[in-house]
Image (cartoon, rainbow, N blue to C red):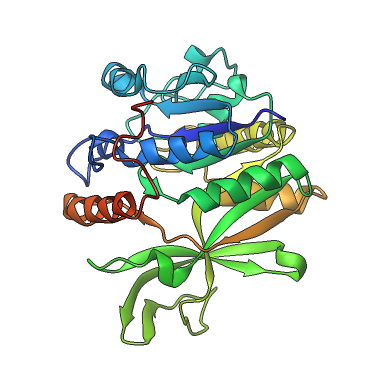
Length: 300
């Protein structure tokens, strides 16, 4: 069976959250959300886990994860704030704010030799999502894929959300992603902030991106090329970020690559603010009661 890598983006400082949300316990045996992603990925056949972290949280993060994973799984820790520590020649100038989700791939590039998926460390994607992306990566139908969620399965009970609504072409090909802000549920309808690129009604069945992407290894060189172009234009910026959707869009426009959108039935949830944590813990508790997960993920 072909090897697969999972990149877990966990370099954030949790400024809005007030702490390291990527390792904040939400499970019955003190598991964090990323524990469930890694567990699901391993069960779906992923054989290498690459954690993208910052040098600032290295000690506490590696202590949290150390010794958990099965011996057959290869584990790497790479530093997004200093890619040179990862034997990479693609230097990023130091700054307090991370350089973006696509830059996480740049930081991990030296460890990638096989098809890979990349996910946020503080988002719950569900086991079926990992099986879908694992099967697709092994089938090598298109160079890039993305797991898309139904919009209604990503809404929050605690306020408005911002979502990337996918524009789909024939055969579930991604044609673009439009950011729609301030989406809230009101009865059977959705309210949202219109913009020049998206002025159609939303009904909840739309497919949105929650940053769960899959790529063949040859895409890494194209991401690195895009990063060099981005860095040349934004080297002095304190805020500019190199995002996966824009990198994918540029690759598609510049080459014959395509991105296939996989629709998952799973319900997404995650933590942005401290107030989200109790609800996430309850959702995990329900999944344990339903025997979707054991009460201790890593006991065996």
